[in-house]
Length: 572
Image (cartoon, rainbow, N blue to C red; front, side, top):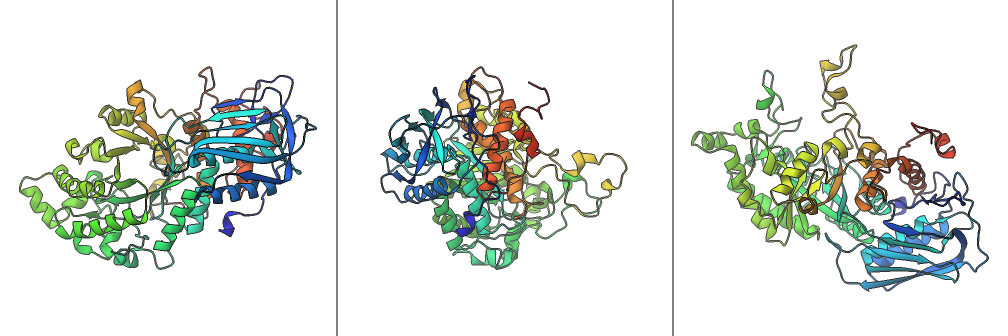
């Protein structure tokens, strides 16, 4: 994991959350902003060179303590604008003592992530108290962001009480269209822990490639991946899952089906309809396309072999991933693909419908997934698609979660009003791949002196700025009971035009914007959106992430950070 702990790109420090203190022009920047923070008499104290963190021994927490101790003692940050807070004459802080009530609670959805942190004005010990080890990890991240300078120092007389608003806060990464190395995934998980995110949704396979090596179905990756160097072995998965545990990040696998399964045809051509066909045959109307983008193939719900293979896949995936959520995809069923298969043509000519075909598939797979003690997550299409959708009676609300990606708050409303829990990934706000044009070849629409159609060629354009992400309210328009069914949100990075060379910049710091809104909200105490004061804090946080080895893209010229307020739209 040596590549995770890379050298400093910049020697920059923490600038903390802005307080309403008129006599002291200082800032304390913890990202995401804590729910409650008190620093009534701003002072600083030095950190002892022999500083240590004391805690009960725990399989996952102990490595985190080692990691944070290293970060706190060796990452010397110097703020662009030096704080004016004076050092106290008290002895340096020697110890951070962790008190944890429950060392047994596993990392799963709904686990308590709260913590309190107290750094006294006098004395040599600070205290971090948490109900679980996962809350303790969040508190350790906060403490690490409170340290700056060389020799290192931090605020004293400080009290923080913190917990997330939403239980599910994540990133979805597509590793099928383009491959990402294991180190790229580990670095992403580490950056997630910096931002107190807790769910890495791994869209590991799709029509384009099947990089996941499965012991019961080795031919899927051997024939369906981009090659032996672009596969995730059993040991790779174990490493990623373990790394996630040590950072408080759940690793949620998605095996998308029955759509998006063209890569399965390399091993089992008999179970995949319309595989390896051109996605939009010449003269074909859009509604008769074979896929919504290049890369065709749907599993055939009528072929018995489909379920033989799929049940092996489900068994192996639930063995490899201890996570309680299993994402089954079920999005973008394209009628033209299924209609291209002779056996499905006969089913339809005998009076069957495409929705009944999906019902057969769901009824043959969902109970098997839940038999492995899993909650099933599907994309919203399985319930909301206008043409092909499942009978809701086959989707029990107690064991099914729906992830929304279309039509903003309206589809969230439809999901929760039907009684389902929702994960929000509205493409209008949370799709990070948008705004980079299209990837189709020989497209004449770009041959113009005027504006390129379709938002510059991107179906979900324009580019989603951090402000767009930060200002999105994922429970907008919901009543109190409906809002309780929104368990959280995920930004999504689909990889038609992304790979490891641009991964960090596509994710960060825009994902940080979502991280704060899902942790502590995007409004101040009066209910006003706080994007204005968040700008300087996010700028500084971006530089801190860069210094930790995350190649986050810049938000503004460096001049703006060193001249606060001068780059605002309205001068204050």
